[in-house]
Amino acid sequence: MRASVLFFGMLRDIVGMSREEAEFPEGADLHSVFAAYAARFPRLGDLARSIVVARNQEFADPATKLAEGDEVAFLPPVSGGCDARDPEIREAGHYFALTRRPIDIRAVIERLLSGAEGAVVTFEGTVRNHTKGRPTRCLDYECYESMALKMMARIGREIAAAHQVERVAMVHRLGRLLIGETSVAVIVTAPHRRAAFEAALEGIDRLKKVVPIWKKEHFVDGEVWVEGEWDEHVRSAG
Image (cartoon, rainbow, N blue to C red):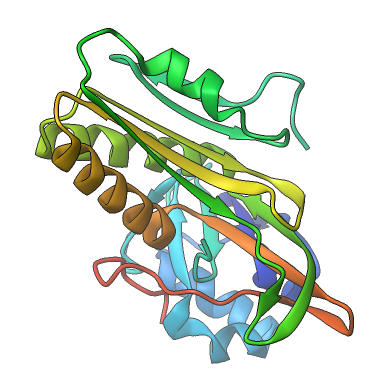
């Protein structure tokens, strides 16, 4: 069977490629696909407990059987080239997007306003100038774009249903960001402030644990992929 295998963040650096078209035997499962690459690149095996696997842009159990033409992606812990138009999803008044341009918070809020809201809560994550006392020059963000956008929309729908809110927006920057720039925005409109605050907090917390976005931090004396952690409900490849 033929499948496309994708690698992101530090895993791409380890294997030296972002994508490979590969053949696997009939009956192969995702665990055996990972094992084949771990045999070629032992460092992958060392990281198995922190790597998760996606099949056709959905998180998958390693025991899942492979099918002809599948797209398999191996994803390191999240830490939370594009067309001129940013990839986005608009549905039921909600808005989810990835962009390589500065996030225009006011423009995003304008997309959400309907006149029914009594509160608008905005969370902005910004690039700070240090990590544990080590001066930071800039950050690079990359992601599994199609899956990331799908996951952001799912989170938005779920928190809108769980809280008494009107509309939800999530926007994440990709590419090179400088100190002080906004990397991510979560915006919630609601009739009342408490629901809006609670939904915004849940939104950013979940985004940072399940949306496949990674960052590399650049220092004066080196660079490193920032290691985060997956949500406890996401199965690892190991």
